[in-house]
Length: 161
Image (cartoon, rainbow, N blue to C red; front, side):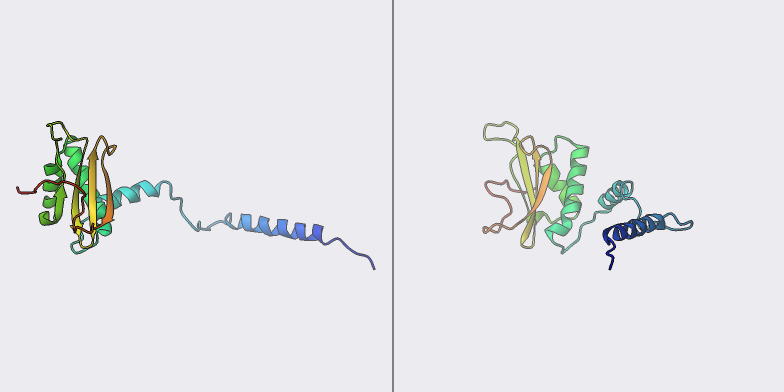
């Protein structure tokens, strides 16, 4: 009985199968199974950012895109925005002032603070924004409410305007 090598036959079959798969997409009238995402991504991202809206009763995570949109617009209008500027813009956008906190804009000796923080409490979570040199510009995050019931640690100023 003569033994025939199986490996060369399997290799030829595998090559033929992969060639058939490669040519499947070259059939006239065939439509691609997916579209390139490189050109679609910037458009989708900018559209989503432009459509961010406040979700009343929503979570902090759900409202983070809108929070960021409002704060970035505040900075675009005034790169030297202070705490009150952020609070006023957030209130105008629909966030509840009673749920907000903000740190002071100046140090105890009257110098400009290296960064300011501001927050909006939403249920058991917080939207926290920070802007300034120490923060490397504007940053934000969602955090749980502190055990004190507040969002920010340390001394904050009264929002009495």
